Length: 50
Image 1 (spheres, rainbow, N blue to C red):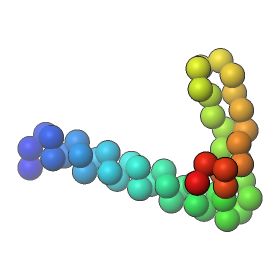
Image 2 (image 1 turned 120 degrees about the vertical axis):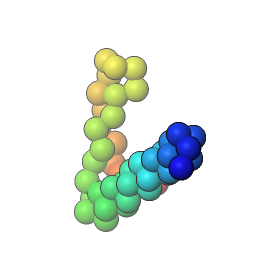
Image 3 (image 1 turned 135 degrees about the horizontal axis):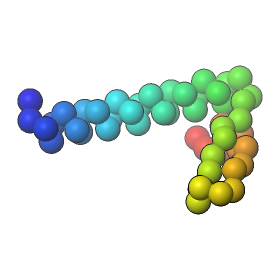
């Protein structure tokens, strides 16, 4: 497996894990903590990000 193939598989796995996390948090009515510019920290309902 080349480095490019490995990188693509790793990226796909991380994206899938993130999507599953959002789905689980949305089912439980939980929020996600995000920081867009490194300064402002916000709580956003997971359901809004899906």
